[in-house]
Image 1 (cartoon, protein in one colour):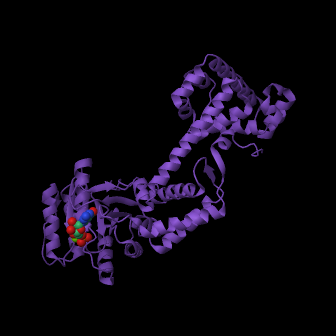
Image 2 (tube, helix red, strand yellow):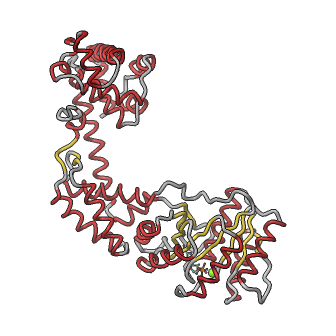
Image 3 (spheres, protein in one colour):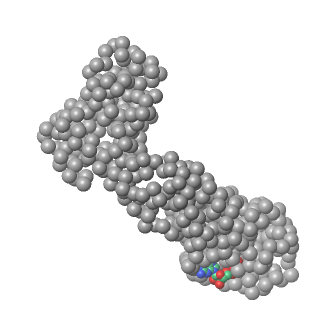
Length: 441
Ligand code: GDP
Ligand code: MG
């Protein structure tokens, strides 16, 4: 209705909006940063294009530049893109024995990562784990897995020379069932490049065991290549998650974004070294910071936002101290509550409000009501908002109708406003508000 009045709070914390020019200029730098981080070109392009649309018109926090605001928006968008919905570290391994297929190019870190995840499942989740090497071309690779198994105390499938990968997979499946294992890993052979033989082999294995998870292991230092590899494996075999290795290196990890953008598959873990405990659950925030390489700006904007929030609160407090608390103030407070994640958050932001919190608990206020209350205030005229005492029966009817709500709800809102206004007055007189404010600063 009257968004012209906007949120009191928003006006106090924001300075203008980002123009197309602001965004375009800043986005040029962002694109360079992404490319330097080894994000593949098409992904960097489409990502910046998508964020450009979102950023244009967005509000700029007081005391930061438009460029800084753009960087913050890019960062948040980067986190969102990388994050996905799933819990990264939680593998689907119910219904034992659950097969996990490890795929990727040679040297990407499949065997090492198999050991790392097996160790984690054993130590952290108490799972009984079996590992099998399907790398028939390189006997040394089978030995490598057996040695890893000994190091971490995880069983490996006995090596039988001359078997095809699919036969080994079937034997592992059988052994896992007989031996009462929760999980069994199939560590496939890699090639230096993707070829038909490799894909046929992996497909056969997949069809023989129907893996619960197919984890693609890729070297996080290979930006463009990683994307092609991911796309190919996902097309031919189907991938359920990605592990990025060598993230202990100097690379900024742009492959994470490319991977996510191209395959849409969640990144589950990152490898941080050769040792078997050098594995971490994927943390979108940390990788986003690393990819963008503008952590200083991001935290600067976050701090500015906090300061602006506090300043706006203080300014409102000053009004309250003078006993001023009209419907605009109430709307500002309600919007602040929405922003802070409801009652609890808001009250904890404002020391000395414990009493009020109790009073409001009794009146049955919860976050789902906030929107309706704001709608009621929006449906009042400017005069009514400034002076709620004007509200007689006919005006009340009009306001409730305008908001599509009952007069009884409006009455509740008015009662709450009176209580809060009284409280503000009392607190203001007693100097309690002042003390509360100094505690906040
Ligand atoms: P595979 O051919 O895919 O099975 O690759 P391997 O597991 O044999 O790993 C190849 C090399 O990369 C080995 O020397 C590993 O120690 C090393 N490696 C694997 N993961 C990481 C990692 O996260 N960081 C580092 N620095 N080295 C790794
Ligand atoms: Mg290997």
